[in-house]
Image (cartoon, rainbow, N blue to C red; front, side, top):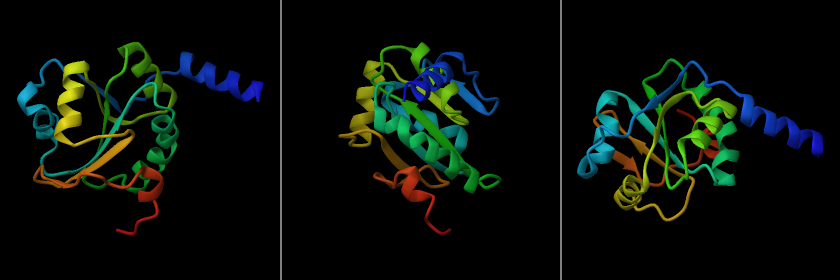
Length: 154
């Protein structure tokens, strides 16, 4: 157990950001249109939204299934959008993105932005997932987790 712990700790502190990870600035997001601003560059694609926090063990545990889900939809018009909320700092956010190989679009929201997003999506627990269609309309406010979604047929 100690060896596994040390390996995970090393991965967390020495990991490099994956080349396919996009770290987006949340400074340009307008508070009243926060979600719409995140989605506008993905119009014409399906968006699988993953809302998580750095301190949330279930959020981080689900990220391995998220990698499998990304592989299942590779080459298709699907964007994986990872939004970190209610977390203390961006350093921890970046370390987890590196350690868990979070390829896709990533945002770190401040406290006020986190509150807006949780209200917009009616989030009561995390991890939280939503599915957004190609026109930017939320079609499932409570989409299945990655470990359940990988078993769905297209």
